[in-house]
Length: 134
Image 1 (cartoon, rainbow, N blue to C red):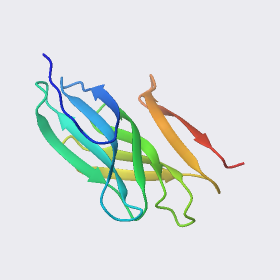
Image 2 (cartoon, rainbow, N blue to C red):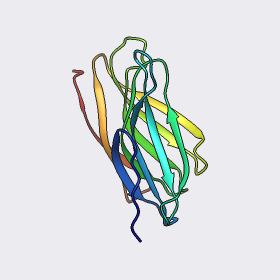
Image 3 (tube, helix red, strand yellow):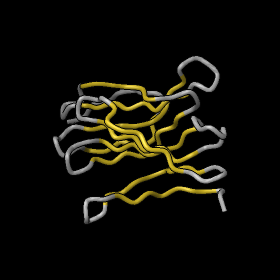
């Protein structure tokens, strides 16, 4: 089956264990420092099941996406929603219905970004990214 959708700022698409798909990217929300992570979940036939933005006070970017053992989506990217105003790695756990289950931020004294994630054989994950912290 073929289908086509157009969404702004898409960076990654994955096929889900349920037979559907999920995509992640980012989208401007209209104000200064207001770019939010954008995730869309599609059914097996390409129908949009839900789409959702996730953001805080600064800019939040989604670059990678995996599905964990429970069917939860894990978004990787980076955020400027930090006390110091630098960029930190951003991880989001998103339930099957699109609700935000958890948010984690990791970083040093300078900028950190995560671009991709992969599952490990023990059920964990590994991130690929960059850091400017020493």
